[in-house]
Length: 455
Ligand code: HEM
Image (tube, rainbow, N blue to C red):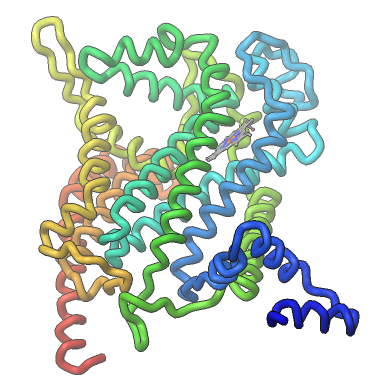
């Protein structure tokens, strides 16, 4: 009698039932010829224990929360710019003509049960999502996690960041309040500034010359379906590659390119990550309940001839806004052809930032003459040049981000706006190389000390 048959007869004799997991594995073996071994191996997939890996998980959980809260919002949001007269419970706007979209967001905020909480959780989840992705990306950058065999996954991750930021922009453009309309006007002008193609592209995207009455209806399916589907697909690809390639890990005793040190997926990691999900959901719900965000009723409906003071985009678009504010107003005119000043900071600069960023794993490989496979990460001090470029890049974006809110900073700290603007124009050029040099020297010193003392 085979071992398996013997076990089965013993279990029947003593009335012992097999656990659902074992029964599932048995079913796989019977029907797919040995599938339980595969399942067992996958359930034992090892996840590293470092805190740094939590960043990617925060991003994933924010996405789940965005989908769940977004579905609730979609039940009440009207993607229409047809004019209505507001009759809801917010007294200062009663009797004011506005778009159906704006009126539905006012209802969502002030009359729909839990509407404001869900709106605010949705908005906070978007802000934290991009933040987690950005810090996750910087962790990759500073530790060389993008080297072979993860170069394609770096590109997938960066595309993810791009789509999420863009979907956030679409999202906060939908309520059709004065702030979102101001953002859309900026987006229209930037698109229009592209030489030759720009005006046609802007007109195709917006359905005519700004302001148009159909833009919200166009954005809506992109925001709730197209981009989320793209993001879900990229997330799946990102995680699938991660699973097949195994995880990177920080250097340390017992770590090499062939082993992984950490926790198996079942049961420890599965329980831990469920806890992380609860934590992210809890923190975002607390944010949504306690911290006001995007109070659209205070801004009023969008009208093309009005503008809010201190109009700010969401933080992840702030660097682009800052670049536009800092760049001098140099329109270039050749005959009847005009190249608007906004083209350089809003189209050329993002191209100059994102193209090398996408190619970074290959550029880094060429610069360091290192095309090998790496599963163990490097510490920033081991590669001072890489750390220096990273620090310069972060400093550059940080100055632009501050510049995106220059009017608010000037008002809050009582600064002269023009002097502050000029200071930022100087700092954006001077600070990044200073930060890069400082980082280079600190990292080199650390690596020299490590070589000399082993500490
Ligand atoms: C990556 C995914 C997403 C991001 C980054 C994102 C971001 C945003 C942001 C920032 C807003 C403005 C919220 C506000 O009014 O303060 C918004 C609005 C909205 N979102 Fe999303 N969202 C995402 C996915 C979704 C999904 C999957 C749905 C629906 C299934 C959805 C439905 C909506 C609706 C209906 C609104 C308009 C209502 C409102 O503004 O309150 N979103 N989104």
